[in-house]
Image (cartoon, rainbow, N blue to C red):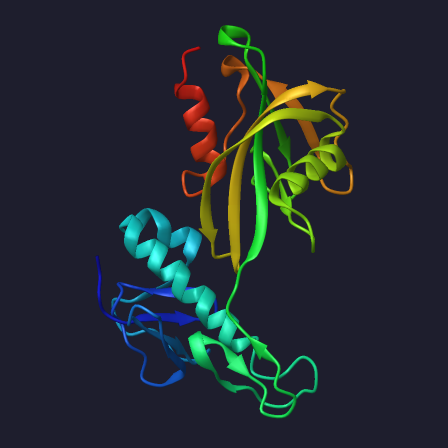
Length: 243
């Protein structure tokens, strides 16, 4: 694992890691001690250094280095977006536990994530097994994925799954079970993955969110999301099952 500084220029990561800008517009230290820098927008990267989006950089980095870079980006974005108090507009100051506090009204804010759920829905067993996959207009051409959406205030993860499936696909599910989670630095998400069984209803994709949604078998699978994502991890795990 690379232990040196991590530099971003806007939302682009400087590779190789350890490249240091002449002038840093922002500097912070992650809780584990890693230094994170933000280069000025108009600074040309040094010779031999490329500025790449995190998605582009993924296949060229060790997994742990990519995860750390994503974490660094989320911390930079949080700090940039929490310079002033949202209640009284006073400048915030450092507070305990990597948070910030308003010296005027006393309000405190702390780093956090936007939490989203993602669910892979299946029906049937063995060769007859099918998965409900949907296509957003924002996806690359031909790619289908599991349904996902952000949680709402006061909502449990499980309630968010049932709501998103009902709203986006028009069906009901049962036997919901946790799969895993993934930090998602686009820009500051935490994806929480579930698998579920179909209960009833006909697929009716919400046209305001989706271009299409279908049931796919192993033999008719469309293009799937990149291996960077928990959506792909869930699909690969399902395809590895033999029951």
